[in-house]
Length: 289
Image (cartoon, rainbow, N blue to C red):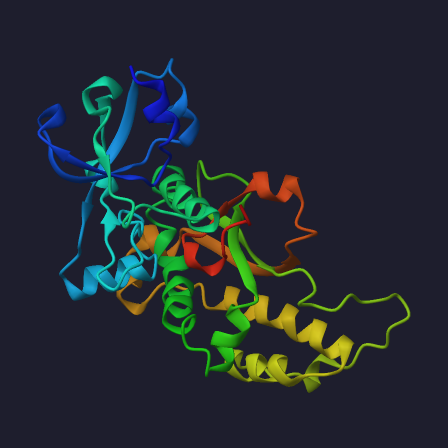
């Protein structure tokens, strides 16, 4: 095996196969880089590089709604890895093939993002089927507003790094859920024991109005309380659509959903272990490489 050749490859490299391993076309390496470069690893995993012509499929992939297709090439006709068609090949069967550098992932930030996308395909938590309709309204709301910076909700969502869902146990319902809304450090002012808190009756109850006030509020205490209300109002959106009213499995699956706000520098490891990420991956940028 040509060790020097594989030391020059990494996760996200695109290979042009012309009959090697009985394959033709462009394939992206999805194995972790350490497995690619280590001689003792005899296999690597690759996926075909695809260009999504279907407008809806392409839009969903670009917005990271469909984890099957992580973006590889950022050119105008960007291409995606099809993780559903991933398979293993022997390294010796593809050694020496040409790397398509113009399509390969070139910088550390993009490499980190691609690696997280591959991990998401395998690591997504499967919420119980009867619980998913309760969470779907929040997922749909965020997907519809996240890329609309002119809306107050869209602006507020750009301060949210992750949303997680906690249950005492996922083994058996009915469930009491906590919707953890985690925001960038510094987005929410800290409160002090001697702060004077305004009456909650002076705050809005509508989610959009709350977001509008968050974007322009200057008072530290009111801003912090508005953010807490934002988390609570998102949790209130966790209700099944009308079509599930006659489905007792869904209707009775959840007892309550409460919202809890945290910043990403204070959300504890214990809470992380007790909760699962709500699959809205595009909320947070990858950790710097």
